[in-house]
Length: 396
Image (cartoon, rainbow, N blue to C red; front, side):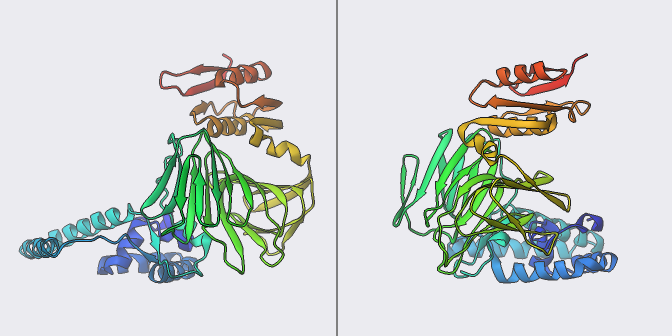
C-alpha cells in the first residue's frame, strides 16, 4: 500500500478503495497503523478520511445474500477450521495469510455494487453517483437502464428513448411498472449510442455517447437534482417551487426552466455549459462565487480556472441531430468526440494531437469518410486496423 496515491482523494474516492474498505470491514491492527501513517504524512487528508468513514457507516451496505441454515453452518465450520490451521503456523506467516484473506474478501466485496439504505431519502445524489463502481465498459454494445439492485433493462437500439410516466416506464419497446425501484436510477449510454429521457417532472434530456446519468425515479417535493458524468442537452420543465440542479464532479448548475448543454465527462480535464434560453447559475467546485450565464454564452472550466464567452449556442447542440461543428479545435479533441460517438477506438499520434482544424462533420457518415475529410484538411494519414480500430499518424 502506498500512501502518496491518496493525496488527491475525496471522501467518496475512499469508498472505492479496497484498502480503505478492508480497514473499515475488519479494523485490523496492520491497517490501523497504515492509515495512521497516511494521516500523519498528509495531515490535510484527515478531514476527508473522517468524512469517508462517516459516509461508510451511515450510507453504505453491501448486497444481501440469502443462505439456508445448513449453508450457514457449513460456512462457519469451514471458517473455524481455517482459523485453527492458521494458529498452528508461525506468526509471520499467520499475519501474511490473514492479510491475504482479508484483501481477497475486500476485493470480492468491492466488486459488488454498492447499495444505499433505501429508507434514507435525504442521501445526496452526488455521493451516490460517485460511489458507484467504476468498472463499466463504455465500449459495451448496449445501453443500460438500472432501476434497482436486481432490475437492469438492456436497450439495443442505437438511439434509445426512455420516458417516466405516472405508474410505468417506457424504454424503447419495454413497458416497466414502477415497482421496487431504488431511490436513484441510472442511465448508462455507451460509446456509439445516444439516448433521450423524459424524467418524472417532464424535463427532457438528450444523452450523448459515453455518458452516465443518475436521477431519482421520482423527484421530491422540495428539489429536483440529477448527476451527470458525460454530455447532455436538457430542456428543464419549469417549476418555480422546485429549482432544478445538475451536479457534476466539477460544478453544480442551478436552473428554474431553461435549455442548455452540459459537457462534463469525468475523464476530461475540461468542462462546459452552453445556454440556449433562460438563465443558469453555475457553482464551480473551485470558486465560491456563482457564475450567471445569459443565452448564447458558454462557461468553460479547466484545471481550476474558468472563462465565459459569447457563442452561437445552437452549434453546441448539433450533436443531438448527428452533426459536429467545430472551430479551431485540436485534433485530439476531435478524435475523442469521434471515438465516443461511433464507439470505435482511435489512436492519434502525440506529434499531431495539437493540430487545429475547423469544419463540420455529418456523424451519420461512415468513419472512413470522416477521417478522409480530416486528412484533406490536415497533414495526416489514417489506417483501419484488423480489430476495427483506427490509427492516425503524421504524413511521412
